[in-house]
Amino acid sequence: MNTAIYKDFTFEAAHKLPNVPTGHKCARLHGHSYKVRIHLEGAINKDSGWFIDFSDIKTIFKPIYNQLDHHYLNDIEGLENPTAEIISKWIWEKLKPNLSELSAIELMETCTCGVIYKGK
Image 1 (cartoon, rainbow, N blue to C red):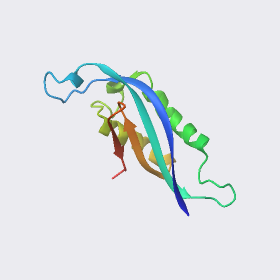
Image 2: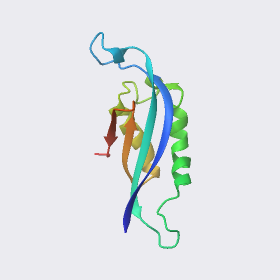
Image 3: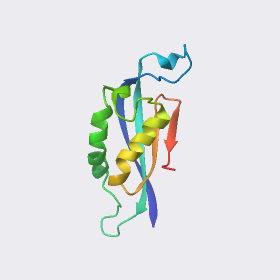
């Protein structure tokens, strides 16, 4: 039986978007309180009752969190144009080799807007 789970994380970061039209508000340096939701799908182990321990997800995400939290995103390789879409894809690419059960990355940059990246 497959089931879907998620684990949420938050991080604070600053960025600006270099490829927006002149005068666009996102071209100026600003910050967000980002929320990342890591979605996974897998078969429940009949002995343990889960398919992955939530603490294992935290351990795997920790190095990525350390790169992002309280940093200027534009300085991170691969995030020179750090839109929510690009950040979520970047997180996916960092996580997928160590989390085969990964099914989606959800990234919210405000309370009302975000992106869901499914690795396709």
